[in-house]
Image (cartoon, rainbow, N blue to C red; front, side, top):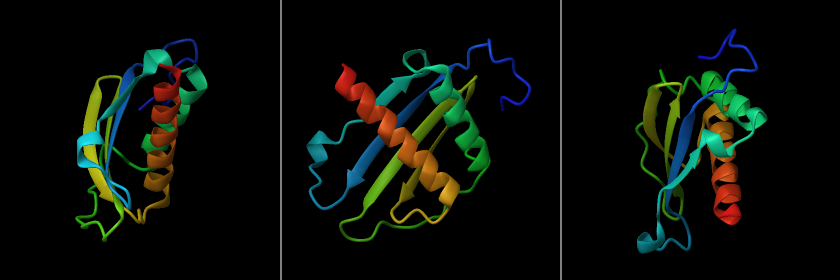
Length: 116
């Protein structure tokens, strides 16, 4: 994705996450959170890009698993420099790289929600 791109150039895109299920899930409150890369610093943009590469986000075939009772399902969408994809993964996320990406996406979406 961004290999060899100069640090001074901005990485463009956005990240989206929707969380469903879980112990105290309220379907009406499950809203998609979107964070624009314009609202993130360069370190966060680079972290997302790196994690997407490590998880092979744009090329992987997600496991077709149904969430266990009281487990969460994450719909994660990434758009990075014109490439866009959305995948749905259920807990427990078996791929450590994908689990880390989902964790960072959740953290950044929470931070942006608080900042608004």
